Image (cartoon, rainbow, N blue to C red; front, side):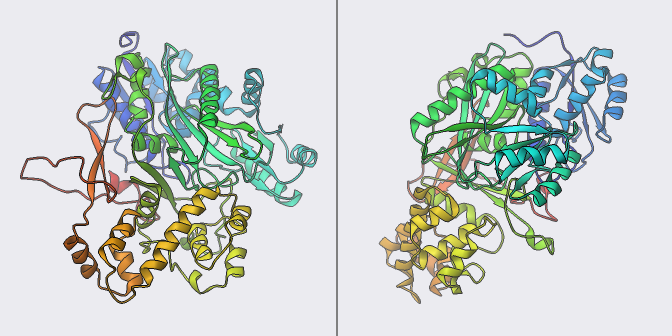
Length: 573
């Protein structure tokens, strides 16, 4: 299909202020949309209330409005600018909800504004819990048992029938806002009241708990000709019960059988086709590895946090491609560096990506460090390595919280094994560090699986790291021999961490490593749909696979790292 000529001016609604659950990933997607659509020749009108964003830079749109994000003000801007189209699914939940409200109140019809990228009924079927449930029933895709509540009293009756614990999911929200996992009627009354207030339509889904199941995500892109591709499979290491924004996850899936991945793909394609989204959709499933049962949890008919992760993990710019698809192009018209065009895209790569959340519980006195179905993270990091262990350790030292490895965090090393096991009964931001010391003290892996519901393979990988660290500690006070140093570097141990645990100056570690010829190699993740673009990452597992620019004059720019309280998107800007 050629570029759409029935539209000339496109309105894009930004995501507004940074809040937990809606952060700079939506500035990223909105910026990509502006760039893609302007390159296709469309005039762009942008509305956002957050000045510390790249999308509000003068060069990103033809007309930029720094205004409150509410339906009345957007209607005034539509009256003034007279856009032909509105792109709702690249500005987070705010853009989606406002677009739906503008349609329901007749503003879009009054001014002849078309919605591109996602049909309005698709928004409704993806976000309204009742319509979504009915859509899944028609498709024959199983959901957790659930019923809708519009009052706290209704929720109490439903929960009594399902049996506690239950999950409360308010409609038209994100980041788990207003929802949660509740274990009794007292908790239900508090959380349900909050959830009904948070939902724009006063609707909460009361759902049976699938606590402890694997949480798996599929990123799908669809074009107007109904071609669909899977961009990325994401495996959450933390099980159901921990919000995906807080969950530690990997791409690709490392422990999920290929047969299960094929089932997830088939379900995701049926769902995305039925909902009718043009562009990217995030589909979340729960999988019980004991029985093989798979249930759909929810979809995001828009770009999401996971879309940003999947884009960087694979080199597939989901937001950029989604905008081009909304503008009328199809997957077979967009170049793909490997196989010609994007309709031939398949997830591939000889590397592992790990995402780890950044929390700020220390900033909020009296707030309990406990992870659940409502997102708590304020930021996140992504790391790339040739192996899971290498990527995992790189993620830990990217958090910028003063830790450069998993061991000896806080006072966990001084606690007894029973004390550590007791700390693992509920998920917290410290769970991986506590697990590390529990394994060091001889914890049985089956016991840890029972306490955390983390897949055993991930705990076995951690056990291997602990065993290697103990071998390294046998050389305390001196630099380990080259073969052990090489093994440590290949498994992701940082020079700074080795210096700390060995009591040896960091320069001495580095000099010994370099003398032994132990150096990182640099590798590229090519970007699809963009000419001559790539992300680079280091690894000690393989030698260099990329070359530096021959230009002798270079400038290095250091980014701000993970978002945290006091350091957010303004430094990305």
